[in-house]
Image (cartoon, rainbow, N blue to C red; front, side):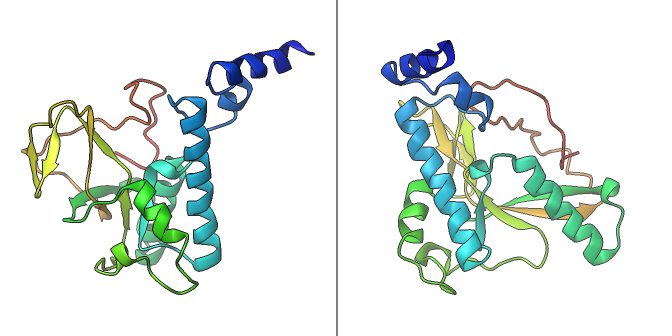
Length: 197
């Protein structure tokens, strides 16, 4: 048995994602069992998109490279309105709808081509930008369109569906809190500013 294969075997025994896989996958802090479940959900999301067309809302944290998706959103806006992409950024509009990835995936398993999952029937697709879900807050909670204290024992809370609306030369209101966005709960990693200013 090669050293690489032995490392994979030991990772399996310890319920860790093998380093060989982790190097070629999305950033994750999950155990092997949770990681495999998450990978299956990601594949289900992409498979549904391929077979049934674009969803009304996109699982942003389900992408391997979310910056590419967001850059594509800005590029579509730039082409549509003949605007310079380097002058575009997003305005973030939180909507009164929430999504749990597991519940979305459960509904996706039963949806037929051309149909919308039940929880998306009330969502209006915006003319510009995208609706995203799958983001979490650390240290506070979202309660009926306001920020509140996190619940006891709750490390992270779901952020509601967000409309990422491209704007030309957008300057956010200075009273807004410029919250950082991390790919994992480690709150660290490579700084990437692709698709955001």
